[in-house]
Image 1 (cartoon, helix red, strand yellow):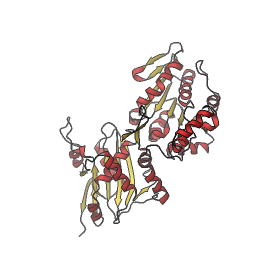
Image 2 (cartoon, rainbow, N blue to C red):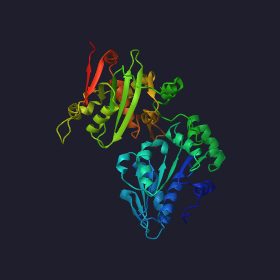
Image 3 (cartoon, helix red, strand yellow):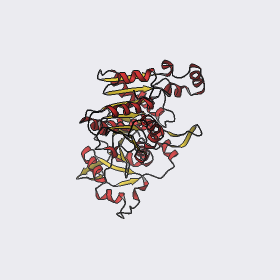
Image 4 (cartoon, helix red, strand yellow):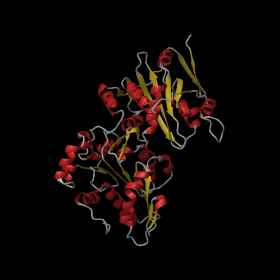
Length: 424
């Protein structure tokens, strides 16, 4: 181990047991960030490959700096010849290895990198496509390793990853509960149990994946949908037209929900798509490739704003591509959140095609004010925001009367031109 690093017994056991792919579920104050930063430093210092590259990812870039930068400087600081670049949150070792701290808030900016090892800290707060689309390929040519580490936030993709790892002999998986490790003094643990919300205590200290996500806006409604069997295999119904609701990103992700509305008012959420760094022609092609019969598209109100460079609005650009948007009303976010809850009470979802969007909706939550020790009135802006905003535009932008009437219309689409023709 590194000379400045004195791991406690559980950390030392983790270092001994790690495999190429490992998942650690840890209670608060376990020391997971210290463990992971030292795992990166040790691997970087010993790596025999040319120009080794290692990375630590936090949910947000600013979190990476706040949480891990001081640890990286401290534990790597006494290596002779080491250099630090604070503007890039980077540590360069004398053997040519590099350890960089990054955030998952802009996944597409990391495309094309290669890695010999990576740590994903607080995985439950990250979009899983960060791993599947970007980081896993980045490890492939040099057969690098990955360490997933975090505290539960509901039965989400992190939970599924941990459970899959438990059943795979090529993966290492471990859970460390505060009641088992003895790291936190028993009297202090008892005081925390008295003072904390029970769900919060079970999640943060006992590593419960079943505890409710603190501050989540829609977890109750989605849990009810799960119990009702409304998250299931939900095939596209050709007799009903398809509508889309969009959150249009400029430098970040664009999200699209695909939905149908039955005569009784039930919403059939049949598909979801999200990508980043693409222009409107890409999404027009996605609509065509899906092969649905479209009757309308909902976008945020600011789509009509003209861009300085072109003097043209994205609404005009979309119209040239055959996509005619209606704009959602510009309501307060609180009103939109309530509208989403109303829709979720009567919504059905295709489990597979909507899995990424559902994960985001489950984790969309209020921002926490660390100074005040309470939640702020507004949502946290992170990877969940795009899907949640698009669903909010769905909820406030659909016109129930028009959509119900459209169920007797005959939608058509040809060559990327989408229109609705009334049945005769």
